[in-house]
Image (cartoon, rainbow, N blue to C red; front, side, top):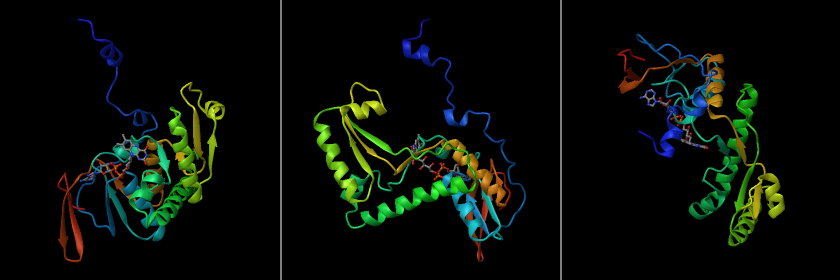
Length: 239
Ligand SMILES: Cc1cc2nc3c(=O)[nH]c(=O)nc-3n(C[C@H](O)[C@H](O)[C@H](O)COP(=O)(O)OP(=O)(O)OC[C@H]3O[C@@H](n4cnc5c(N)ncnc54)[C@H](O)[C@@H]3O)c2cc1C
């Protein structure tokens, strides 16, 4: 039987995310067994959980922080995303202006602070995740889009972005596509990074601060227990 062209091209492919399929992937930490107490239980070791654990330890090094993940830290969305780390909290300035006209100034400020804090954490813990503040290039491939880019540039400048409009030759000097007619380069509000290496680096940093991490440990139930919270895990151990 002959496979159609796409079938042949994919015949040797395996459904493993590119970023995670590398020797640098850390060995899993042992699952939680038995009953444990902690000041703070973090459920999930993606960016949200790992950063929560890190911040909790930074705020109070004596706080006992336990983090559990059903798989391994970073195996889910955090280890397989596009690696575009943008300051915008609103999926773009124009979208934010339209949806949150009263709050967009504050959202822009918080987003900028957030990106700077991410970069500072990466530097503080020496996380090797190829974070590069490349900025972002929007391009026009039809003549009418050039006016749109000019309007976007004006809007961005009103909110303090460092933007530059590029003509045909300038944009093609950046990315040599014969379809590009012009571009807008927003120079300092987006970084590129290696998503899995960021997650693994945060995991290492959290372990270094004394966060207890157990992988392959799924939380299956939460219940109030006096002033505390009792979490049950898939293996039957209590945390
Ligand atoms: C294909 C793709 C591309 C993306 N591209 C980008 C991008 O370029 N830029 C960008 O900013 N964002 C991007 N995102 C979004 C970004 O990756 C996510 O918003 C972010 O990683 C979410 O982090 P998280 O910690 O909330 O979730 P996750 O990384 O999904 O982590 C959740 C963790 O919780 C664990 N968990 C869940 N339930 C339990 C339980 N009961 N017990 C124990 N553990 C549990 C899971 O095992 C998992 O490890 C992309 C997402 C995807 C999927």
